[in-house]
Length: 176
Image (cartoon, rainbow, N blue to C red; front, side, top):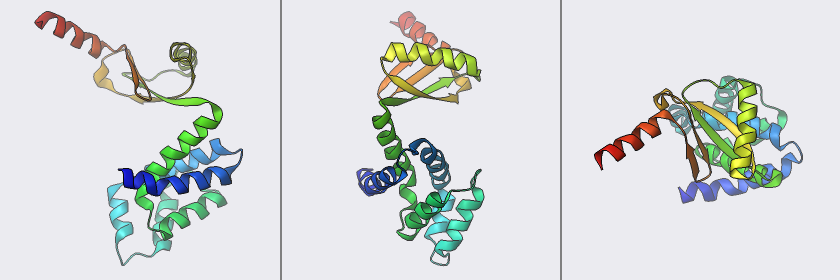
């Protein structure tokens, strides 16, 4: 993994410097590229000697939900031409870290058994920012196996208030 992180760093830093004040917009299309590039079949297709870089570009651009801006197209072409498509997820992660450092915020993933309404998410965000004492960028992922409650991951800190975690605690207490 260290090798991919080393490969991704110059790309993330160059893209961060080039995007200027539009880091949020750049992060959106970069996350889309990273999600597509994480597919193993796409990477296998891109590694085929019979496939041209233009074919790989056209495939990726065609799969994306939103069309890439000119800067995104140029960046994707550079990554494909240099054979660094597999590093795109790590490039996106390092770009997000640079963006968050500039904004003084942190990424937080909220795992929930059920969908969270926007108003409830705003309230939850305020409570979590107070609890973790920092500005958070919340991302919600559904995990039905939690049964109820939420599990929040901010960096290496975890706040688990899920029903599943409470049942596990009760199990440990009863078997001890």
